[in-house]
Image (cartoon, rainbow, N blue to C red; front, top):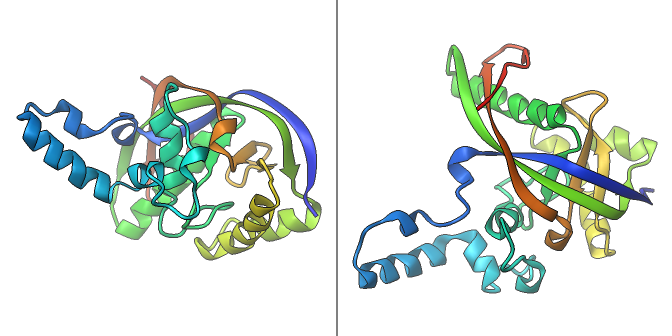
Length: 229
């Protein structure tokens, strides 16, 4: 069974597409009358999962767990409130997690893998560059580490999303037992280390790093084509 061991990481890396890294609402940039903006804001709040969670509208994520009044609170909260339809390796579709690579290359390999898969499934030929904002965060505390059997069961590389099922089951058990999160070997980058943090308050000092342009091609092994912008 996964065991707890203390960790202390500085400047872990979570790469978020730059189009999602604004941190606020696009409505804030519109030059519209106040009454129109008010109506649009209400509509936005009714469909925005992060705002719903902050108002207590997500039964799996209490508003008291979310960050308020700190830098990048919207970004951190969104990672927990927007888990995606299939969830992730250690979170289901009801509640997200803050997934990060301890090393920058680990995070880069993870996003490159998923973009290659996207191009293949979409049958998009050629090389395409994607821009990512690197969000840095620190972690300290007793996190769960997987045992050998859990590594074998939970870290299968494919098929997605079926390969996520064992990890999601384990994560639910640990989450409800009070776990802070899971430290695990990188799946896309051998030798790398990843963090899946279950608690928004434990994403310490979230801050922006560099922006990276990652170029991938469908059907090709990623050649680590990265440009720091």
